[in-house]
Image (cartoon, rainbow, N blue to C red; front, side, top):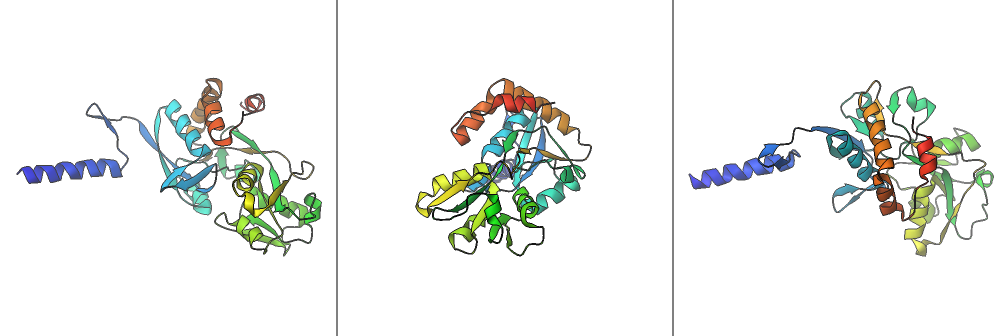
Length: 265
């Protein structure tokens, strides 16, 4: 009998852990758990470390969920599946450095911006490329479906054969292997990669004339009531210092709160 009880107790604990159920004072949490999908291949925003999805976006969405009274279940869905799951409402929210665009807003709802970004160019130190116009005629690696791809297509043409659309966050590999002359992608991610890989002898080229500011937002299905709640929570964590703590943890610098506050509705 004792053996059966022990086995039953073990099974109950295992089931609770596997399903993400958390018990406190012998009572189950009455918080609703949000299913949040991401694309965990973009350090420092979201990536897998020792089997766990971590990053700026992950800490941010957890803080927002807590402020709004929710638990959070993060799932690494992949880039394209992430959009599918939000559209068919099989996930509650998506966060993955997703740029708010007019095209995407036709299908999805977005929170107020939580991060301001811009595209930049990564090349080898001995490259003669000085700005985006110098990319014409060169092989450029971009993440497939990203705003980096859109920026390059706007510059040199949508169907230009020199654009290498890469899935899985492997754009830098193309540059290092010599199969691409440059990478165009988010400036923050580019800078992190260059800083963390000094032996690769890479440099960043910024071009504010050709690359306009971009705004990251949390993505929801059309008409989701979560949007307004997350916007309120975003204001709260900006005002109470939580946003700054998370930002400093991942980027080792101060956020531009004045710019961010001006974008809150």
